Length: 399
Image 1 (cartoon, rainbow, N blue to C red):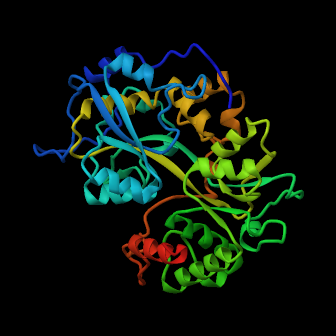
Image 2 (cartoon, rainbow, N blue to C red; image 1 turned 120 degrees about the horizontal axis):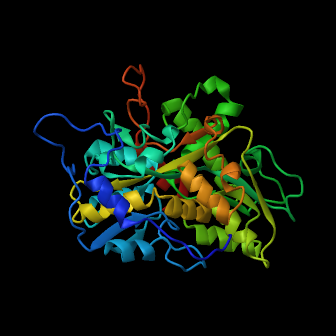
């Protein structure tokens, strides 16, 4: 990871301008006298505290030199930031529903559930001065909007990549076959993400290998398609795969040589690349495409500190904060301004992560929630639900 100093973050003045009438002209403000739960008409005084659920690495305050976008936010707004890291999206939903948090960063397999259940509030983006600069391809998506209204603001996006130890896997793979078929060199050292959403990765493999199944969306699977995915996952499990739940587990496994290939995030490759004692690793987007994420900062409907949450959402769209955060995590920035800032600390970052290349993202299936209606009101068949996925994964893992 690149290191830098002298960061100047979001000025409070910009927030005050937004609060006093600066408009992005992009808000789908609710009509009528009755506003939806959690809707904020105007920014008020900061409450002094903010309780967030985050993906690890989304709220850094200087543990890694040069990456600190939390301390400056606290100094400028007076909102003390408290964070709880989720283990996966299922855990993130449970935490938000506990009522103890003002909001958090959520992937599509959590955000859709939270919007549907009414656990998060629509966001008045006219109060957020940095929203207008966000790439249009990140706005008004199924994972961050509902009924034409934004329910959060983009943080960053990225694909799930294939990573390997180049000392062991000497021929660079171009397909996901490496983690499904196995070889004597990798069996027992294959690294797989430990979450029910990984079932979609099996579905992507089946889309390429078994087109007769007719899978159109790896997150919306009928009985036959789902059974085929679980069968594939059972065969993979029997290769002796090792499941990782936290990025630290996977980094440690690759560093020690206990892992040699697997599904990963660019963040882990960056960490390993900065460790001169670790084996060399490389990553690739396989030819079949991949699952991925487009994460959203969302506010709880009953947030105790809504003004601090709005200040945080605006902060995380600023050039400085988003540039830092997306470089740190190895994901795509959300605006040209953030890309310009990222270029000063990690030249080539936005080109590497395809930040503004919408064609690149067409081969990536953003996480979303499995639904009984197959996410299609006109579907003639039914699909397996989120609960079905969690139950099947628990059985597969034996826990």
